[in-house]
Amino acid sequence: MNKKPKATRTGARRRALQALYQWQVTGFPPAEIERQFVEEHDLGEAQREYFAELLYGVVAHRATIDEALGRFADRAVEEIDPIERAILRLGAYELLYRKEIPYRAVLNEAINLAKAFGATHKSYKYVNGVLDKLAHQVRAEEISGLQPHSA
Image (cartoon, rainbow, N blue to C red):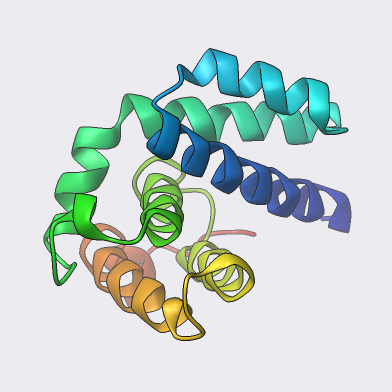
């Protein structure tokens, strides 16, 4: 596999994180946020598609995602810092709905986002802890090695 799809997904995740943060803070409809991002950022076609999937997917599945995260967070999901909440929702979406993406890749991407954008220098530890516990629940077969996934 070439490097471009991964780089494209990484870029899409960064933009989706920013869009989800905006959605959480402003309450603007996802379509309006998507329009703003498409107009203001040079998103390649693949990056734009994955960006849109993440934005709309997290919004559409928010209740399920928050319920899953709530089992492992130390406080109500709505009480988590908005950036960390957006990172957790993004990672949880991929763990729950994008099973072809290896759980380690999901965690690594979320940790990198928390290191880059987190509210504190320890944000990545919190994000890792919550998503790792969720991964062990929803990706148990993959983690145990019974169901190998390709990158």
